[in-house]
Length: 382
Image 1 (spheres, rainbow, N blue to C red):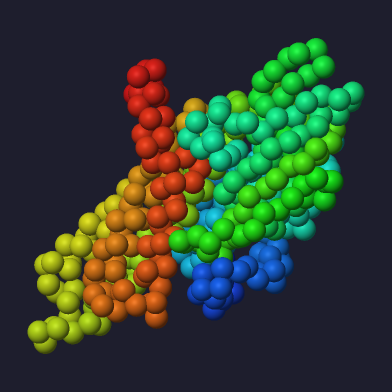
Image 2: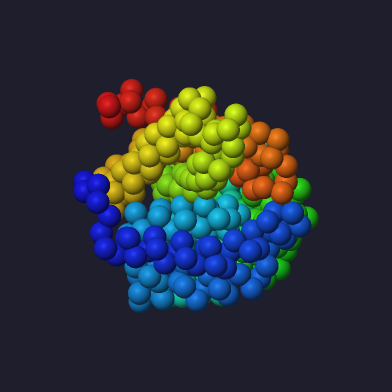
């Protein structure tokens, strides 16, 4: 693994950072305060081809590698974690499964619109009685002729309010009595598809989270992703990919809080000198910088392993666990460094901290991440 970014990856960082600072920075506080997302931003994101980051050019994508994807999510989240979450979910757990397991007909039907942002995608597995217990889902579709009839609900759906194409996990029962778990593709204009009210969240408030309700939705066989009984495997491998994006989101949040802290500590004068010159502050900055670099390297390693077709379940869980933990620690320390000012909503520090808290929960809690890491170790993946 080369620790030096390629010229293309450096260009991605510069370009996305410039876009985020010019386009997202002015509106990010409003997204958080009003818990609304401006649809015009979707158009701006589409102009710079951020909806199909890793999709091949034949489907309208940018055809970039996983490290470029992680850099993109990091830079977007450094300015607006809500937008970073939307793009992470759309590109990874939304678009990736269709590209990786979909038929050519499914790819041609969905990916061009997903790549341009004409259709926002998402992925939903969580239900009221099935969170960390992913096999505990109760959503079910029963075969009737050449179709399945779907009933059930999902909760905490990222992109739920704006998503046009949502992948979900569901139990199934066929005419001949077969049962299992499938991953299927749903479209919001299907009859019986209901979007719930927006959730009033603590953080990432600009990404509107909703419940989804399914009332006798008729699902054609063509909307089943992979084989009928491949659903759970597809979901678990999809989440391995998604966790790289969530880790990158956490990294971007931490980086923003760290940069604010360095700048503030150099300009804040107490006892006739900058507070950065006091060991109590300078040591905090040293710890923040070290943890952020360690998180970044874990993320980049997982992205590298994915692109080189190596097993990366453990590495994906590691980077998601560590980066999200670092984001919470760094944002909390950033508030402390800023003192009373950090506690005020006039500065973005409290928003960073609220946003960071979510990263330890979605796409697998940190407790589940440690369980995955431990399982991999005990299976011989040292």
